[in-house]
Length: 152
Image (cartoon, rainbow, N blue to C red; front, side, top):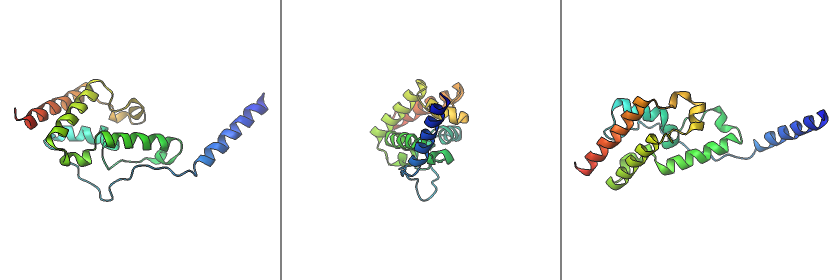
C-alpha cells in the first residue's frame, strides 16, 4: 500500500515538473505603466477599482510569483483574458456612450450579485473583497455616471 502511494506521488511530482516547461500565455501588460483614470470616478471609487478590479480588467495585471507556476498560470491566463475581454479599464476612454452605459450596467450587476471580484481571487487576495460600503460607492457611481451619459 505504501509503495503504491509513494509511486503515485512520484508520478504526480514528475508530471508537475514536466508541465513547467510548457509555455504559458499570460496576457501581456502594457509596456508603459499606465495612469488609468476612469471618467468621473472619485478618488475612493478609483482606489476600489485599482485594488479589486484592475488585475483582471486592465492592461496592468500584477502577476505574482504563482502566476508563473503551472497549472495555476493557465487558470490565471484564462481569467485575465476573459476579464479584459469583458471590461478593460485601460480602454475605458475609448468606449462610445452605448458601450459605456452597457459596461456601467454590467459593473453594477456583477457587484450587486457579488459575482465580482471572483471568490477564488478574493481567497488569494482578501484585501480585494468588497465591503457593503464599497459596493454602495461603486453602484452609486455607476448609476450617476449612467445618468450623466444619458443626459438626465
